[in-house]
Length: 408
Image 1 (spheres, one colour):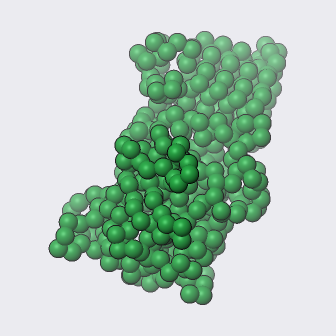
Image 2 (cartoon, rainbow, N blue to C red; image 1 turned 45 degrees about the vertical axis):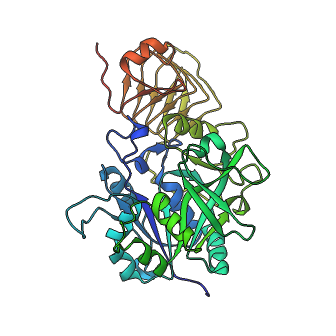
Image 3 (spheres, rainbow, N blue to C red; image 1 turned 120 degrees about the vertical axis):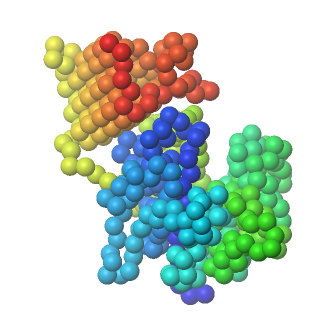
């Protein structure tokens, strides 16, 4: 197949319960990441950099900020018939929400029928990675598969949260285990499993046929139902993500992929960005991550009102942020954040519009948007006290919800 026509469908309708309270007021793909980005920007940037410019984003829960972000940021040329279009749950099959990822595709088959692509890419919206999807497409076309599943090795403990693939030497998937308590390990490696990344390329007719209900029970989820069904038919192939060669990427970053479905994994993926030599490099001009940029002034580091010096190390400072006579170390400071004199922010993520009062101490925190941290507050230093007022992750990250008010 020469230059197959591709329609990309990004699944962005999940609730993201494990990321609460960050998803109290927004869809999971709209959660900020790395200071200036949203989670969905990584999947959309991969498609844009891969030259796949016909994209629909299926939304459902708390989608306003996600829809607004897409409409403000992701605009392609109508002249060339390219687009990124958010599609809310249309209930075209009856008055019900999406029951799962496969049902979401079924309820939106009109998008596929209208576009008439040769291949449909069905990708998740909330993972951190770089990927040249055109290389996966070439593999899919050459293998003549009904579906190709991108996969990456993970530890056996992590694999319990993913679909795990068993494949033959030629890449044919012979078994697929969705979120098994005892997933099979890779041949010759008893510590790791081959996990599905939740990224799929489908032959169009294969996808239409498998998600369309017949006399059997309808297929609800991609990982739990569709991929096992196509595996039983011998139509599923695996694509080894570690072979993907992204321009500007060094060997340390090859195969980098993070599922940020929990508060701890979200925090750790953010911290990956600020290592001295980061394993995920935001400064790759050959494969940029696109997002919305507000018209804000440059970041500013200055002495405080009383002449206190600032100290900043190992951190990201986004546009419009001000560090005024304060101490910032190993942290991500989002746009329009103000950190007042003698405040200490360590190993933390401050989202847009946060104001940290004078003399405050923050350690291993995630502070959501527009929170005003009072002068001399202590957050992240006393686990027992924090647990009375805030969300605490299993690994001890303290999370302050968006717009939180503090009692005087």
